[in-house]
Image 1 (spheres, rainbow, N blue to C red):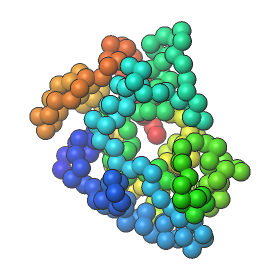
Image 2 (image 1 turned 135 degrees about the vertical axis):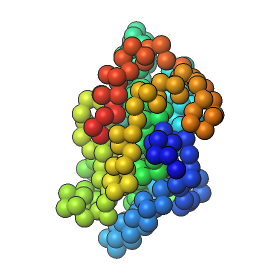
Image 3 (image 1 turned 180 degrees about the vertical axis):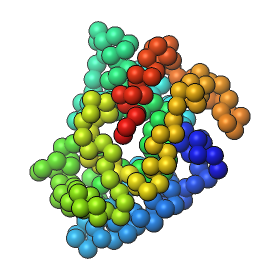
Image 4 (image 1 turned 30 degrees about the vertical axis):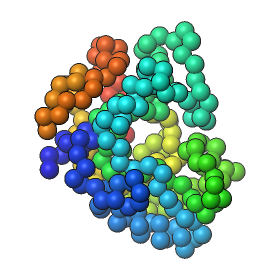
Length: 233
């Protein structure tokens, strides 16, 4: 299968189902199973809140946020208002928490948003917010255990690509990535492959996708956006 199709979120052929509605790259699924078993021995019940997310789903999220059909929130889940922000600033606000379609690590099936079911009640409403994972939060013990494993390079190949704030994507303590496979897709995106998709031209499979709603804002600064929000992560 062409690597570019996986990188852009245009295929599911490399995925296996691990739960209802949750698809993961096959090697990632096997590694996560081992990690979850090790976590269980320490009293944690690792669950996957989100895994693979295809191009069209990511496109819908970003377009809806731009059009005001979906809320734009900060790291704590508080709804942000556009008010007098320029298009350029508002786009950066969206990209702080939502990747442009074709650039999301969730396209690969190697990246997972996780939580600890053993730390909360069955009816707990997960929000994937920093307060849940930082010291004193409901998932702080799981976070500490996992971070210690990662620092020792003893987490079955998983790491946190958004552990630090580099001025682009906001830190995400819940987001883990299976490095042995993810590294093959890390630099697979390029403007040459992304721009035709964003314009609504047919992809490598001959399928046409809805154009990006904010394409006119993106085009003049596309290279800078990739450098800030995608490259080097």
